[in-house]
Image (cartoon, rainbow over all chains, first blue to last red; front, side, top):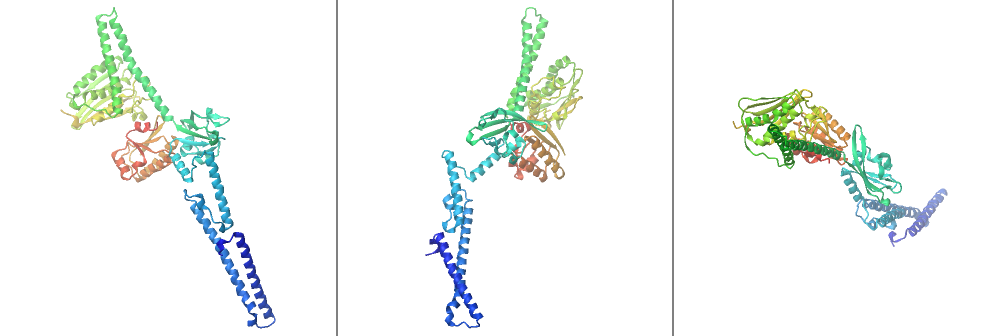
Length: 474
Length: 111
């Protein structure tokens, strides 16, 4: 019969019995020796029982101590193995059980496992038999939540925060850990999403959150309103979305104005032209205005089409020969009446001979037209706009200098952005789609050229459009 | 090195003007981290005026990126010239950042 086949209680009784025998034998032996020694007697072979009792008792005690220590050490080793095995997420709970022979430690450990197992079973029952998540699954879910740019806050039915991902902490301007167990309403105004009975109700609202001087627009959505599980609050930063919507609305307003103004002029002059009291001189004037407005409308539509081509990456140039003298003549004819009407002096300071440029004639004209049109538009009455050109082996530089309102340093980098219009009050009275300079830049880039601006607010601007020498034919 | 800051819509653009090396990197890092915090992560580095950056500048970019990544964001760069782009690619760091051709595309990525 080995130790492992005995029950713990039997083992204890047997152990105590043997230990008692060992102690009694040791005591008898020790007393016998002391008694004979005190009487001055000598121990002989007739006293073998007393002589043998001491080593027998001591040996028995040593064996018992060894067995007891071995059992304890085996229990500790088994416990250690079970604890280490629990690290394995897929380990079956039965595999983690300890054998009963290891005593109280084994009993306590097995009881603990039973409680954990019971808890998991109850959770599975509550979830309708759905599989429960392991620690590994939870870690994975945490990693996924941490990678989201949307804020995710798990809120209990009592509105206390159970979990907040880092994005939520950033958007709310707090530390994720400090948010835990606090009332969500202390950090966030959930407004109409608050519900007295269930905590939060399903729905979505937008709120403003101030952070220093900046104001962020946050969209709060409650995606899960099951009372038993609490709620999941999704926080999205929609500030840039609103800024883009505002820009789009502004563009539509400007574009509508740009389209409607020439149409209105055309309709009015067409009505005058067909009226009975329109004489020949008036008819000529009407046709001239209608012609100008048609061309203006054509340019606005061409700009919009070019931008959509540009956005689609399909803006291309039709290579050909563009005679600069002809381009400048067309610009002069088009803009002199406008400049005169606005009392702006328009000057063309061009060299006697201008080269022919290899490129897209219409696109180059569009680029020069947009820059010159802007210069006249932003130059107040009595101002001056000068168009110049300089060319050599290095290339061609066409300059447009004005004495207009100028461009603030902050705006200088942005004037070539699509739909960008300055907030400068001096320029706020002018109309436009915010596409002209974007296209001018894109067209110059398509010709391996560049466009630069130098400006002093209140004094004027200088735009330089350059083309490389390889583009010059003669 | 000068660092211009612009707000386009709700996006903060940092535009360092000049090469970023040893002495400038700490101020660059500080400006980046401040802008990232202030703008709630809506931050773009416009690198169009950076002709060159050394390893300390790359480290500053990585620091800012780590800060943003801890909140589910990534540092966005735009307007990189060939030198800076190659620098990022050769060091294997290009994949760490969101890189855009221009500021408009970068700003649009926040929609």
